[in-house]
Length: 453
Image (cartoon, rainbow, N blue to C red):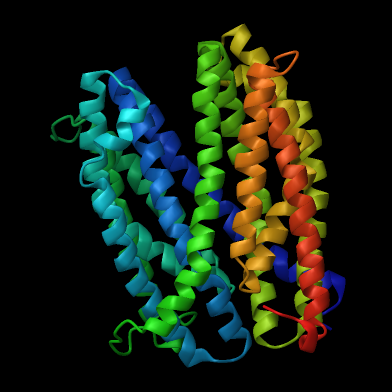
């Protein structure tokens, strides 16, 4: 039967590995920009580093709002309400338009954002131009995030893997030509990297729309069969779920951004070692994230089918798989951390700093697995606001507040390690809260009369 532990695990892993591949390939976009722009000019690379970081924070926060589509689509799919899925997607695309207008207003003049980085005048000018061009990709990126959320909710992540590969491959070719000026094109520097990203973003959106119209996986939902105006009831539900999710994304992203800014006060070696550790942390996070997305899809479908026992089974199985793999990942990190650090730098001080910080990444892997999967599973139940409160308390309160004290004001100041020690405390605390809340919600839903959404 489907509800056996082995079958539950098989269902989750079947969808998790394409998500993992897609997420890992997408990181290649950042690597491409770093390598190609870095060879062109250090000033342009500095502009890209600041501009892309600011744009990514804004874009991922707005894209997080569209994640509200995942539990809504997933529950309709589980309930067999195929026609509702088409309407969900149409309303999601209207929301993407609204979010584009909001995000575009912030990017009309991005100098107020870039000013916080205190760049040199010429580098700031490059960064402003870079973000102006990159803003043209925002509508396509948000439209694609709607497709991304729906595809995962329907248990169809493989097209996302294909699109991620094509996007990164095309970006590598285009950026190489546009940044340095190849194939008869003038060299554009950072602007070329931004223009390349704009082009591939619209190609990805076009490909996703083509799949929605023609693929047997999506065509039955008749997403583009008719025009539909925005419906306030549907938009209200999307915003109710999505705004807290978007803010949660912002909290997690900005926590690492602010951490880097504070650590910058400790000197070049400290911030360089932190950057290596932060990149490593972002990479290994792809594993629990992919399992969380796959688990949430199965939970939402089971909730839609009104099978609360199956939903709880999927949630607990997802956490068990993530915990088991996190232990393997932790020991692998401890084994390879020296090699990874020396691969990223030839500076002994920076390498030793990164090696020391990698220990904390390994230390919180188990708890990160719990909090990530539990958080996504709770969103599958259409719970989001309380999760934002937990994120704020843990990652801004503990992660940054306690980290700042440990780094600079503790009886024995810990330096950069203080922020990572606080990150461990924040992750453990988040795992406890999310784990308890998921257990409580699943138990209460088994007694509908006593459950309050």
